Image 1 (tube, rainbow, N blue to C red):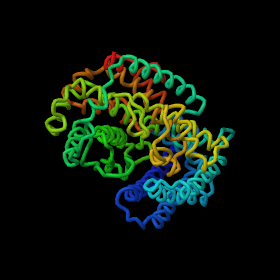
Image 2: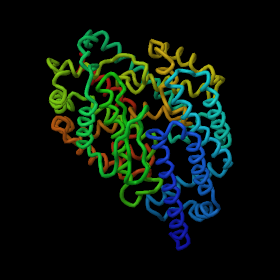
Image 3: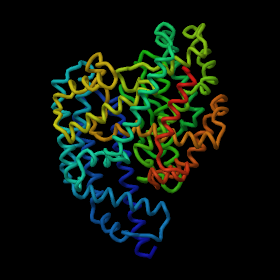
Image 4: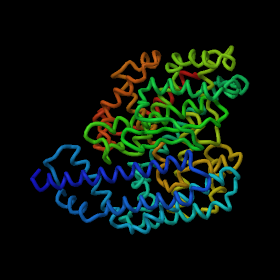
Amino acid sequence: MTEKQKRAYDRLLEIDRKITMIGHIEAVLGYDFETVMSEKGGDERSRQMAFLSSMIHEMSTGKELGECLEVLDGITDATDEQKALVRVWKKEYNDAVMIPAKLVEDISQAASECQNKWFTARKDGNYKSFYPYLEKLIDLSKESAAITSRGRSLYDTLLDRNDCGFDSEQIEKLFGGMQDTIKAVVNDVDASGKQVSDEDMAFLYEKYDIGKQKQFSHMILEDMGYEFDRGSIGEVAHPFTSTVGSDDIRITTRFEDANVTSQIFTIVHEGGHAIYEMGANSGSIKGTILGQGQSNTFHESQSRLWENLVARSPYFWEHYFPLFCDTFPDQTKGVKFETFMKAVNRIKVEDIRCNADEVTYGLHIILRFKLEKQFIDGDLKVRDLPEAWDALSLELLGKRPDCIQTGVLQDVHWMGGMYGYFPSYALGNIINAQIWDTMSKDLDTVSIMRTGKLSEFKDYLTEKYYQYGGIYGIDEMLTRGTGKNLDSSFFDRYLRDKYRRLFG
């Protein structure tokens, strides 16, 4: 770098760290909003968060940042980290500078208002009084997307903005293959006649002491390598992970689900997000935009790797099932290991995405992907979303939801303006299967799970992926880590092989 470029880069990094810090402050307000804020605090909180969003927008479109990027444009004599920071901010700046500050503020306030109204709507099931808030937020989001579309569809623009990593055409192709795989596995398991009955898995729905559930989950998180001096656990209606500081990465869970293992898988899922974020928030990229991770899709690949490929594995439970039985002796009395494993891996269509089994989960995401495309690029009206949801649920899952709370009102994502995020969950399954295949050749994954030494997975993943945060793209990350570009055949093979072993 020339001396002028060095000065420009140092200033860019300084601005980036300030914006990241404000983002963390905004996350504190968001975490508080979801967990402990008073019932009447929502209106002012909406204004507070809108104020911070407008501040971030102002800094992200500032003259000085633009001048730094101009000096650094096309830079080659730099480290991968330096090139990545310039690349990421060039994209952010070019989009942000086109969007009026007032629109950014309006979207932030509308999102907070919509989430606040969603809490009430979810309790009373009143969609009619709620949907105008959702409609307003979707309209504002479409208005913003139109400004930065550059010839793309609005939905592709929002996929890109939500850091999905793929466009809708690529997703449709990948999801088509995923749907075929899911259908084949469901048919094979049904034909085997070896699924457990409702009676045999009734033990999972007994009353389990919440304090003991917390202790058991805490133990698993410790084994995973979750750093409790850099994070904490909260309770919410809809679980999430929030980075409110580089060394303050919080996860949340809930205990309202009838099936005791739902909470365990939720805590492992959110713990996977946090461990990835902790690994990325290290070294020289700590506290920068690169420390937030590669993308939402890669984030979901890691949370679901921990949840499914680790925590739903029979080898994992060879270690944890005896401990589970010791913790809950009355509920597990007489339960055999084989019955337990078939119970926690049972394929059964559920209304709630978060409670879905590993196999049919992808259908929940495909449903949301199709609906998003329709109300962003198509002619689906927000007021008609419940009916459209129910019809598509019947088509894909074979049943309509039992009520609107377990239908269109179950997720918080749309209520917070996250359009184009849902595909990340299922795409993450494709990515993590490929990563797991390589990891299983590099490590004795079976032995690690059987002994509960799960932090060895964390160490491996940190070395291969986490420490690089957002420096490399998905394809480059996979090529560096697995030697191949994204290949969905790994997911197909993993799912078929696992359920053949369990129910074959």
